[in-house]
Length: 149
Image 1 (tube, rainbow, N blue to C red):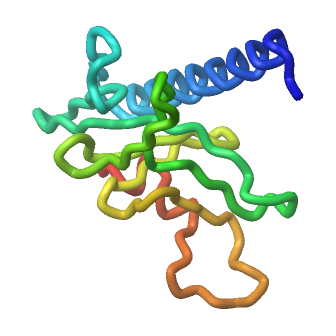
Image 2: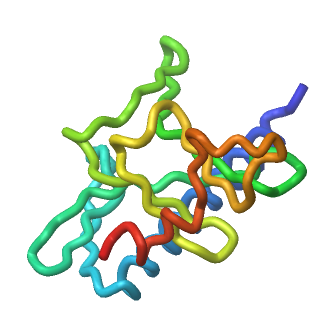
């Protein structure tokens, strides 16, 4: 069982990973020619708004991790998690709240329309060993410059 100090270290590492992912995504959007606005406070369902050619998009950033040791795919959770006195509450995002999820993984920003996500989203670098391609999402198709043209 973890003691309080260990829990704080884990929490700090999670917070740092999230902040780093968000900053890398913001930098990627700026490099792609977007103006980026961050909402004041922590009350919006999106992390930032990206503006290009007078079109605004709401972006929620999520940290990603490898799906397994083979390192052929990574995933992120497409939901928010809040802990309060009543327990853990998880909530999905929808198209009324955000337009895209963004993540930064292995040096690249990936952007996924919220409509394509359920509870989690997996992006693959290589086809599965089974050879089945139906329902497979390849990471290259979700690179920022391919999704947001």
